[in-house]
Image (cartoon, rainbow, N blue to C red):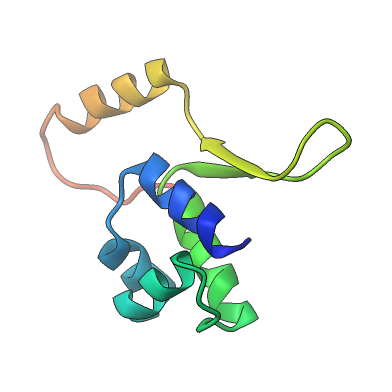
Length: 98
């Protein structure tokens, strides 16, 4: 995953750089630099960023004979609306299954 794909994934998931960086265990400035084309991250940090983005609802699409790499939402728009409804119902906070 390169920086531009990470930035696209983060925007698609509507999660802040600070939130993704915190989940990945890196500094926000490091993530922003990587997204802009910098090479400030190690392979392990890049994997941690990818894992964080997957956690926040994106799927990475591998390159194949039809097209290049990409990113899309893990859930359909209908699924996202249902999740928003469920999360807005109230009640005690529980642990997500992931």
